[in-house]
Length: 320
Image (spheres, rainbow, N blue to C red):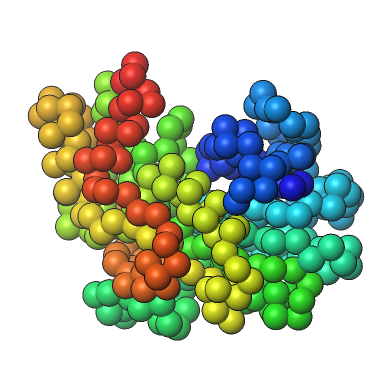
């Protein structure tokens, strides 16, 4: 099994790589080659099989040729300009999130290898007036450039899959928390920041009202979701080739309550409520709960609760 992770230097990509090295296989098929690619070449984990790292940009034809030269059997396409950055820089968001993905899928078609392609999308493809529980069949109504780009990329993957150029599976991941490291340019960055920074003894900002609903999952659940998606039978998630990953619905206030249960009131008091109308406009346009009938029927994983997610972060970051 030859596996390629595009975006292998990111938090999810690197964690996915470590998990694949740990289990040595993908869906019970031994891995014989793993390639990790990102704008800056990722660090190669120690593995019992060859690991190649590449510096690559999916908007570059030469770099895409390098990515596909090894004729991967499974491709995890995780590269993207995140939500806040895509909203702030219209041209960049479309160049990478749509143009780069379209070019990559076209190159795969020309190569004729028909790999499994697992791509990540976002709940940002939904928006506007939404039901309390969004069904799997709800139409896409993105209210941000990022959500629009992701929706169009979903349709491209489904069409290439329908034509037999590849075997596509798009997973709409919940907002991932708690992300280790530093804040990024995503509009949802605060969802990790209001937990991560206080636990490290630093102040954090909550830019949305406490009653803002959020659809979340842990990093480990996200990785397990991607692996699970890669092993499904062709066509299992339907003609749209897209599935809503399973997540938990919590409010920002409930997250702060869980932080206080885990670390005490002094730590929870490190969060400052500072409204940011631009961030709130993006985040509150996203749905807060899904039926997840398809994901549940197909056995996708789900976290236990917000307390378990915070405990996982604390266990992985004992210094905090």
